[in-house]
Each structure stands twice: as C-alpha cells, then as structure tokens.
Image 1 (cartoon, rainbow, N blue to C red):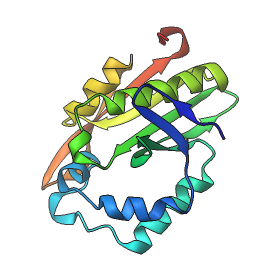
Image 2 (cartoon, rainbow, N blue to C red):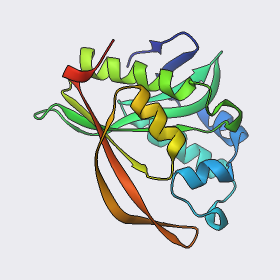
Image 3 (cartoon, rainbow, N blue to C red):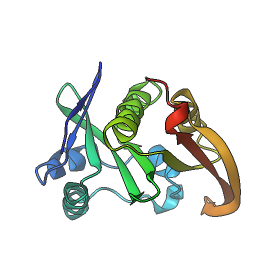
Image 4 (tube, rainbow, N blue to C red):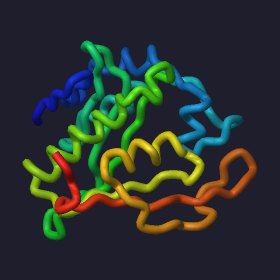
Length: 176
C-alpha cells in the first residue's frame, strides 16, 4: 500500500498500533452528529472500540490514516470498489475538532481522488453525506464533487428525519 503526501497532510496505511492514537482522540459529539449519530447516542471511545477500528482499517487495502506532522487525525477510505465498472465510494472522518474547517479534509480528499483516478484508474467516485453537514458538502464541492441526487428522510438524528445527498466525481471532471 502506498503513502500519499500533500503539503500539510499525509495518508498512510493503517496499523494495529494506531489504536492508542485513536483512543486518545476520543469521541466528539459534534463530529458524531455529522456522521448521523444522535447526540444522546454518542458514546466515549473505548480501548476495545479503538482496537476494532484500527483492525478494520488495517485490513482494508483502500484505507488510509490521515496524519499531520506524524499525528493521527482521521481516516479516509474507498469502499464498494467495483473493478469492472471502475467505481468506488469514498468516506472520510476527521476526529480532531480543532482541525475542522482548515482545509485538512479537502487536502486528504484531493490526495485520495488523485490516487484513485490516476493509479487505480477509477472512472467514478461517489459519496453520501447528510444534507445538514454543510462543512463536508463544501469540502466535497471544493474537490469537484457535484450533487447528483437526494434520498429523502434516510437518517433519524436527534429526533428528526434528515436527507442524504448523493455526490459524485468522474475522472473526466477531476482537476489535478
């Protein structure tokens, strides 16, 4: 698996040793809400949960740890990879709330999509995002993703139904 390096961000393969750093980041209620977890359902990160997280990422050949200056701050991955149709879905999670809105996620996304389109020769990358997650939507749009549709009332968060947006990016639209 490759290491992808940007100006501020580095994407590297996950290892079981990442569990301690993930445990130290804990669980932020606001971040959990952006993932579709009701505030009352957000639970603290446990040692076992962090170990399972690290194990799952380490087993995925299309998952990377997002680092800044050697410090784990999140994850990014491709999933549902379809080699025949040359498409995949993408997911990203930043776990350090002090780094939100600073371009870190956008840089990580650009590194991953460049790798996906150039090295993996994918044709399309899709993303699902809760319609209220405006920070993530802005980051995706900044990287070239466009809204392709809306799935109504797919997530029940904080006692209310919320829509998912489907966003996509084609290799022909990708700007290096």
